[in-house]
Length: 130
Image (cartoon, rainbow, N blue to C red; front, top):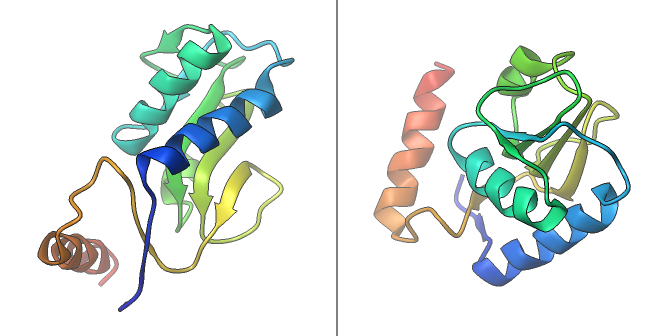
């Protein structure tokens, strides 16, 4: 994995606007963000949509995460919420909405931009599946 896609805070603001446009007419009990990256998105979107930020998922809530790659995390929550979305996904799915489709390693604006830190994160991720 030698190429990385870097997302910045301007990309984040654009993502928040696109999520707001997509979900502004839906009625949700609140927004649940998957810890870690999903929390940042959930807080931002809860302000944009004027919905409460939830500590745990609810049947009528919007679920959000920063990335869906292997779908392991998504599968733990499937069926527990009204709708599902993420900023980035590794593959197209009709189970959730994704703003970006990306096969490369993604570096989010809240993550370290240092090459060595990124390489360490990649190694930790790969070791999970060995």
